[in-house]
Length: 133
Image 1 (cartoon, rainbow, N blue to C red):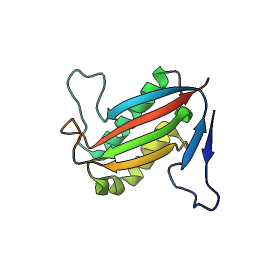
Image 2: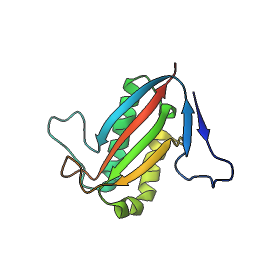
Image 3: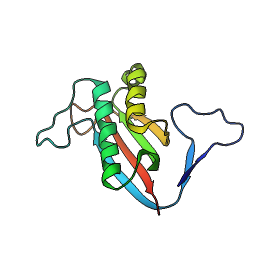
């Protein structure tokens, strides 16, 4: 079970939570990029939007494999190679978010990096979830 933390007087965040309090077993999800994890050769979509959705789907699949649901997600860090591309894709990102996570918003951070390990990757996500104890 988790509880969103919102300090008094702070503006309500849009698309994330400032903090989450949770108890239970922790699941740490390693960096997921927007590729097909079942392929023996990297299959990375050409567009940022498709990569974002696939990376988010991969995070959710790890959650499911652990017996968790999107609501168990407490923290998500998103690494992008181009912040402007992320901002230009907010409508598609919102649609992908609602498809995979509904209206659940964990504590999040967005970090722009110069590159990711896979040359064609433009987004990578790592996450923490708290499972029911």
